[in-house]
Image (tube, rainbow, N blue to C red; front, top):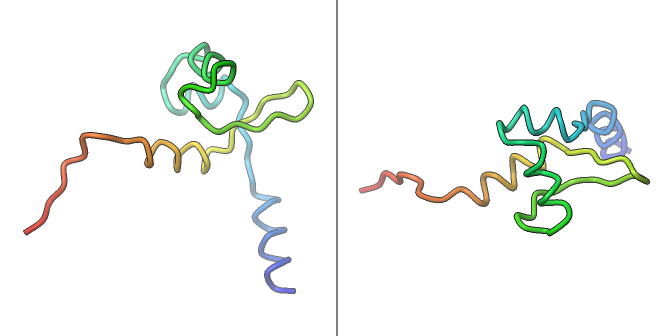
Length: 76
């Protein structure tokens, strides 16, 4: 029961961005998101409900983290 309540609270807090909002947030052109949706490259995650397109910022952030290269790693 607690898991259900936790998932419900998360769903209520979930903010999905329009393509314009997400493009502004990650500082890329809206046309880049449109091209990615139509070609599948890069595979930026998006949600399509009917004709409406939305982006989950957490999913996009996870994708960006996974696809980040040239990180400076520190270690001994």
